[in-house]
Image (cartoon, rainbow, N blue to C red):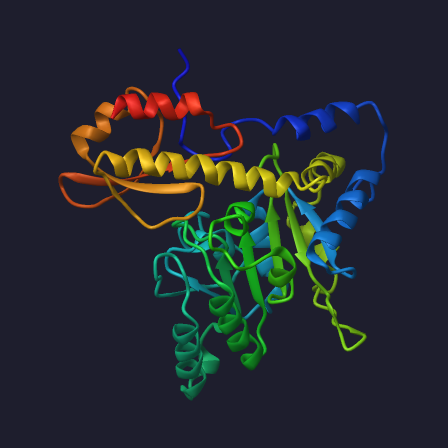
Length: 350
């Protein structure tokens, strides 16, 4: 019998609608390097969803690749990126950003979130130091929505961070690897157009939200007072190529995002996975387990080590970090492929 897996939201193939679109278009020929018909269709749909008719959109294959490429393009050679200490680029990307010559400066993490006050305090201290030119200069800010710990930002929090960035004339970049799950979380007061108008760059994650692979990097280029505000780094297409991130068969990503942004599929996937995560959360809470706060498809549970080992015989999940000698924080993740049968096996195994 198949063991239900809650290890991640990308351990299945593509959502059936995405896979169907790939099969239906497979025999058609197309242009390459992002100029295919489906990539153009996907860009049009994403621009409409973001309410950014001038947005530049590029399709890359994975999150680490997208982060390393965008950050390198936005920064000058002597600049660094600011992120919280739990940020993906600081912990789980094998130094990809540092490999391009840019330091990651870690700020305190508040349940995965950055506080505007911490950011402002750091930047004030940095530029008040008369020797700052001897240091890696902060040149951009990186946040994730939702965070690595499944928490989300609200409008007030993100707007405050963006205001600090605007004051110091540095861009805000938002990692949206799990963006669908953040935007669809209960109580989230941010939608895609608002997000696009409160940062200089972000990406819409496909790999963890129903695609086989693929991330859509968006430079909003919104219009203010009838004047176009250009945010795309100069020569970004060439920069993507130099990073080995340019897809020759660009249709692979384009077809998938064309499907994801048809009839709200991307957001429906997010809503469904969160619904299953809330059922999973209730199973643990009803049996007295300690849970960390999360409104998204990632749920964090404290298990006794003996319980953890016993449960591993029945369902798959990820150990996150040790709490003490007897307890471990574990992560359970839902996706478009999670079923009620999977949850029934979990409940029966506790």
